[in-house]
Length: 181
Image (cartoon, rainbow, N blue to C red; front, side, top):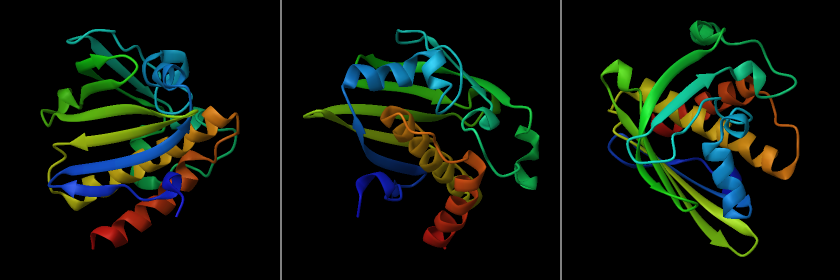
């Protein structure tokens, strides 16, 4: 099976891990992780202050991630006009390692780590999201979200138009729901 279509793995309690083989070089992938105008093309707009302790902004507008998409599902309507939150950089080693907090304002802080490993002209991205808790609905939502966002990142790095976020996310929610049940 193609590494880029594999499901993320629940590698421990409250942890999801993805591996993706991306077009390189690592510096280009790093820019997609850290520069607002590039991050906005696959995840969310928002600056990443380039230092440990720096602020990370997330301005999500899923409708801006592709040209065509399905309507936003009813259970996600609160995100119709976008969402915003902040995190803090906890590891900064360009272009190899980026880690930051996620969801600080909710009181339930999780943490996302990106590891970039050069593999010839490609780059192995290992994304790990930890401290997610044990609520299956949250685990399914987070896994589906990352799976979908990473697919968009791959398309952008290849110069392709990505598939619609909600179209893919809805399918992934069903698949991850089956994996967890």
